Image 1 (tube, helix red, strand yellow):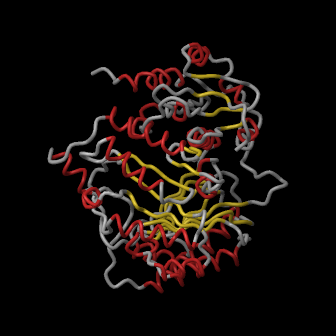
Image 2 (cartoon, one colour):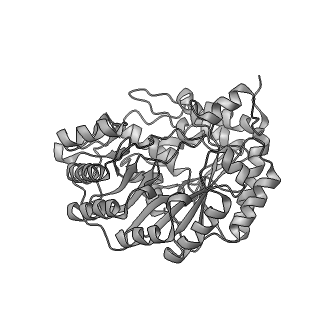
Image 3 (cartoon, rainbow, N blue to C red):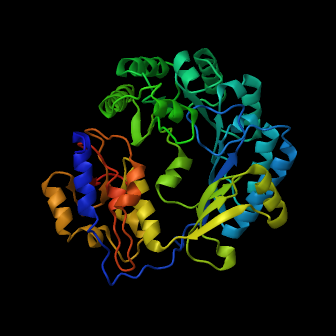
Length: 458
């Protein structure tokens, strides 16, 4: 079957960029931070517990029975201490409590983690400390407790302002409860309250989606995240769609939802600084930017992921780390070894570059030459792309624009559609002396173009 129209430019782009390779004489250097900068990392803390399972969610989460929060707290602080010392970072740039539902944790647990971080590394007084919250576990007094514990930014999982859609998603709050939580959060975290919304739901229309978003934009703060519904295997919603009891919107309809949302947000002063994220008044997420800029981050808690160099072991290459998924097993490992790291993968410099490209092109500032050189000293963007006949052909087709002055970015005019991560493995090719960058550049879709950015550095 032929690819739909909005997929064809993407397929041409991916096919051509498979042939782009690093010069044979390039030898990557060990990853070292700039000398003038302290070694730093962001910290992600995973709280794996929820009150119930949402119908669409396949995150690492558990419904607790007789939860011993004191034991969980002790293990979180011990693992934070172990991994921060292992990384030898001098500064933690931001902390993000995700889940699960971290607003189910007590403010005492949040404070204990932050106190441990402050003892192990420098945590600036104004560092961004974000906590994800669900409306049913985020009353006014509880939110005030989180603020007192050190949280200064809130991310509320509203997901929809339609009660029928909330029931479909398996959420345990109503639209009114969500708006009440938003109102309280804005009082306690003014200018630093973010909301999440999901689009592309079964039976959802462009008009119903736009109507809910319009209502929210009259009440929200300065940060909005929009996510297309992903039907994850093993979830209740996936099974209902597979059985045919629920329809899903056509891709063209989902694309229209996304494009209409971008226009509505832009009209009220929001900057789309990343594919799914919008901010105004400078309220960008510092923590998430650290991911998209390829910075180090440490993950603690069951199932948390991290990317950092374990310098205390004498290593110089970054590792991808995954903590043990199941909370009880994770706690046993933390008590025995100081951490519950289940999987470690040493990343080659080329693999790190691959991540820098794919993540950087999600942002409106993209990848500048200066930023690229932090990860690829001796290999410029021009070395990688400048002499390629395939890239020249993409330029001629209007799919790629090269400007040797600053760096790559993805412009936001035109349609930027859903990111098909499921096709990346098929497109990716690794060889010892060759480096394919198609993983990153195939992520720019529809009628959008990739071009080198004459704008500011990220």
